[in-house]
View 1 (cartoon, one colour):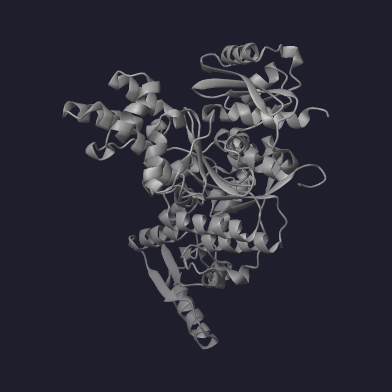
View 2 (cartoon, rainbow over the protein chains, first blue to last red; view 1 turned 45 degrees about the vertical axis):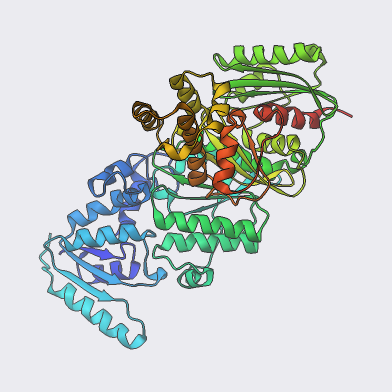
Length: 149
Length: 414
């Protein structure tokens, strides 16, 4: 089983595909779930505390806006954990969106800087390309090591 | 305005304050003024086309969300009493969208709007005055509609640098006091006593008192004030009252002792406003330091500046420390004191122009108030920069106290 980073990092469809083929999706939903259930701080709505943008300094300098660093505090550890990655470019909003394009640029760069297998593909604009899109993802996932934990 | 419980609903139009660690501060500030943030509902499917529709095609999804939420507010699909537009400080894409969304809401609705860029260090205290002003406009429009002072009332403006007090009777200022702020309550006592003495009335005769400024809560409680109000709404009213421009549009710039404010006013009611100054370099404190270094009294600085030419001296007061360094370097190179004084005035208004006036639409007449408006070089520099006539009303430094006395008269029983 490989830990697969997905982009968009909150794409339910990608997370589901990764899981179906026996791997662990590294998605931001899990990070947020952990935040809202484990930390007993009243910091609505997703419990990002003033400490998080500081944690984000590990990935981006202080002159980078706090919204980027706060998001990176969630996403950065996922990238560090990643053993493979799927990056889908130009997706529509409902496929997944982290909201901030500076964060998108930074996280894709950090993923590409890692020495891991990466599948990069465009979001299919028409239904005829959708099958090929899924086939490519499936082939990639099947090529990843599957040994049990 | 507001719902049955008196809670004011503020639409939060933001690109991700919830990811920046500042959301609890936002919520805390809203709670203090009995307001709550609401997130205008939008159709997610519409996000992919909103950029084209709005005319601003940006890459960040949350900025598209801001446009969609602004549209929901303007079209009334979400009912709110005011709008708070905010993006990360230092994000260019965010700043462009923030500004255009602000203009859009102002153009298509009459909702009060605040625009603000946050850092992770933004605190509820920083936001309190802004949200207090926003909720006042939403909640107390009737109070702000007052154009005439009636009865015998007083106002105290407990500012960061000076404390001002006035006593007013039947629409006239009959006494005033102006003292440096040292201990908040003692300074307020002193200024108030001076005003009462000049007016020839006793404290018991005052029918209603209003307080404003940094020390408004402490002073207001001490004197049992009827009105305790932040300085944005109070100063707007004070400015249009003193300038006798109570109807129609106007822009109020208030350069205070420690910060500055730019307020776009319509019929005396603030619409858009900003408050800030990256550093005290755009405030009265900078003028005090300049005066001290030039060896002149602050009351003489303005006349000196009018004689000088700012072009001869390079000065950047973005930071008060670097501003003073520029001054020392200029003097060391043989610059004339009048040119340095003129450059200081220009530097302050340039910073206000770059920081504040980009956030509000400047509509004439432009009314300049606050202690710094008495430094003649300041209105001159502002007029030169904006190429418009700058109006400095009589008693412009008493703006907060006059505004408070005027609004407090709304509590005087007929």
